[in-house]
Length: 245
Ligand code: HPA
Image (cartoon, rainbow, N blue to C red; front, side, top):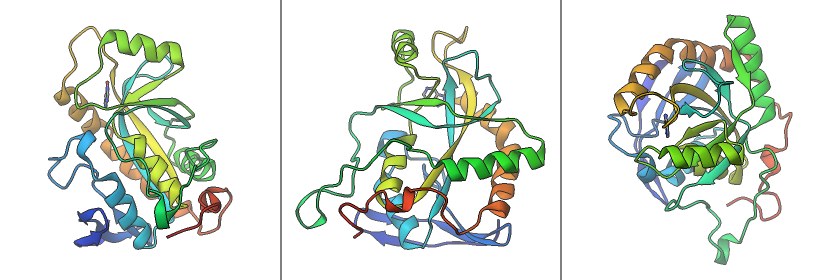
């Protein structure tokens, strides 16, 4: 990213600090979910502030990344996987911008939570780069910040989850509520608890992210080079029933 500058933005949900810049000749905003120094745990991320700020800055398409543990032999350590469904096991996070009253009540459609048009572009970008990126996996979002028990992982497997993480919900929901396309690149950093033959640690996740970081950065850059402003999906009208703020 070139021409980088950090700005401080006031939102109805507090101050956030997006980084503005250019990538693949496009104006982009980089939002560090956990803060610039990774000081914010998943359950305390200001999801509403972050997504609100992106929308205010004119962002219409979000390409997110998510560290994930694998629950299935179909998804191996070091692989990149585009999420297509989620199961929500979070407990304490504000999940909506529509709190009733003047804002109204929105029951946002979640038939296709992760934008299929943006996923298609990411897939095209991966083919140009010769990178293997699987398209479609069910992500279970846990509250964290603790890792799961093996019993929880067994339950999530029974429910159909492929990957586990702590951040995609409510982020994907909030983006949809504001009519933005949202896709997420899952980075398989570890086998989930009880599948791995060792205890899990944050260091393991961070080390795996480091190994994947260059490929993911290239993938995002190539994706931005292929993204066009047009709309081949229904994301922009996801809040049409109630309307925008
Ligand atoms: N569980 C929850 N979140 C995660 C994991 C995990 O195993 N790996 C990376 N993020």
